[in-house]
Length: 474
Figure 1 (cartoon, rainbow, N blue to C red):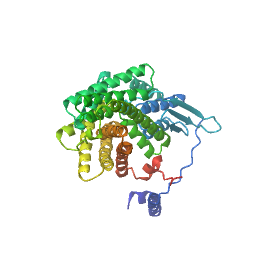
Figure 2 (cartoon, rainbow, N blue to C red; figure 1 turned 90 degrees about the horizontal axis):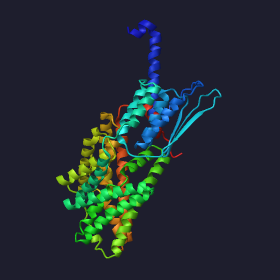
Figure 3 (tube, one colour; figure 1 turned 180 degrees about the vertical axis):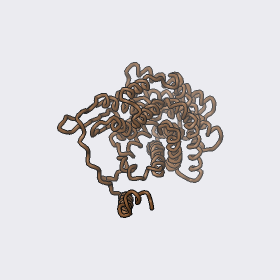
Figure 4 (cartoon, rainbow, N blue to C red; figure 1 turned 90 degrees about the vertical axis):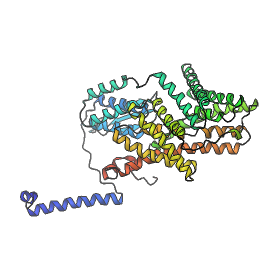
């Protein structure tokens, strides 16, 4: 006789087993038929709303979003804090430029709402780990409200893991590595490095003068294109494309591109649209600066021709793999990623290049090859982020950067300005398609990991995630 039968008697124990079996069958039926379980009735909360909690939720969300986190993760973190500190009936809204938190006490009491504007966004991936750790400890009731405020102030005061000059140098090294990956030699790499650093410093000078960022990027792209035109003019027409590829690669918006696709996949359409518009303006600025210099050079008789544009060979030579790894490593530094992820970012860059070359060798077109490579790297980056306890963005974003389409953008602008507008438009569309495929591949990799994790397909996991709710287009 079991313990339940000794305590409850055989009849009651049998009824208990039947009830448990019926509950398991009901949960299984809900999962198979995709029917949400009935929500329990809400308890009527009290009338007290702690303003310190609302302020904490807003400040943590602001710092996460400003540091480069995706909208879904910011939303999850803010809701976790609200639940941990018992904000009644809390609603959170996260957009690219503002946050809001609203608590509804009930019993006729007025709701309490707080908002915060995101006025400055700069990549600071090193902060994400500390902020998520704060949220986790608060969710486990390990931090009082005052302690959480104190921890948040310490995180904001912490200095970046790299000096400011290294962030500038990292952009130049991205450009130099990109030019080597595009087929350039040491002289081309040095030229690309110098042009990129000069463009970045010029952009910083324009920023201090109050010039909009659109024109800062256009000027930086123009300086890179000008260096390429100079090299072409002195008798090296085949090396100009490598210089521009490197210079443009350091300016391409890999971070907002990945975030925009992630937001779109998870249903945060307003933020996704805003980020995509941001990506569009960045690319438009680069194309404007690049196109203006190419047009001026062609008008002045510079020997710029599509025939002189080399097609970068997708090879597995050690130099190419090392250049791809260096691009990802320097991108991680430029995004102020924590030191613990630098090696993983470099390995991811080399791996995505190997996968892309293998796909191209198997006959895949560039867009599909980039998507497949990004998906594999996205799966590994998501798995590694869970093992390391790190956010996904510092691992995934640098890894895809070696495949960003700098050469295709330059080819498109040359074709547009040398009498081949149809080919130029197709080249630009192809470049944008590759960039979108990279971002979508990273998102797909994350969904694969979520699908096969231990709680990803459980009832609580699916219905707790708004992006998993089936709307069928309504």
